[in-house]
Length: 383
Image (cartoon, rainbow, N blue to C red; front, side, top):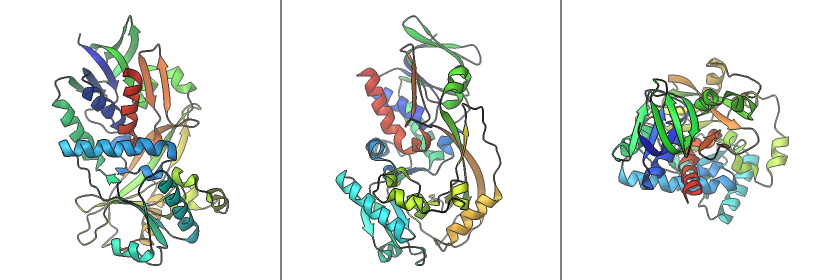
């Protein structure tokens, strides 16, 4: 039986970056992923790394993540593209929130730039002038292709002799035995570790079903699509629009937020399905467009369904056509993503007996916050 300083269960972005920071500390680390390769929330999202969308508390963690992604990119190409992020306002209310967030960012010493409609049009020539009332640009932010990034980070970790990776390995039992943790996989093999992080909601449910049911976690179902590559269109960076301004946590700290939200129609389609419109163009010219949000409480035994709804995809296209004039709107793929989040906390954390640490429910912050959060979590435990 091999003995490790740290066992990590869950090979998504949260687990992988716990492993990354553990190895930087010289810890002998094992990472377990139940699937042959990651196929959960990490590889089903846009790949936008946007601290600008987070509240002031989490923005600091997101900014730390930016530094980590960029430092890792300097050593090993993980596909980071540094084109910044823009929020495009479609009316005066959204422009007011952009201006107020700009002031908050300035107080937090986080660079952002207010752009006029003309400046937005110059930056994005395919932007419709009748949509854009101005923009807020964040030059330091980055994007990644998550379906590429996670494998390249894993390849970087595998070069470290202190790292063992076990894909296709389900940990079905986890317990403290004396001064260490003992993990048993689906084939009966056992692994011993000084500490263990469970960074996957699915394993959490299987390992500790009662605790899982008693938690305040909920599952969020997202729908998005991919447009076939565009030859002539260039949409650099992360593009977030008016509905993003009306949704993201960072704007909820603006003085005008409550009054503006109170005036929104409660029966709108975008509210019903938790939609905001994002664009992100990949290196091959394809464009990811979405997304929607549906919620199901695990504590009540609720489950999200598995249907892709045509009316939601149609809304993405129609709303997108009001924002950009693209070469075409031909759909290549449509898919669903699922992540968990806590209803009452920023993230779900629970320690069992001092050695087993459940860390899940990071919500939609995963791609942006996980590298920085994992660094802080390791510091808290080992420093």
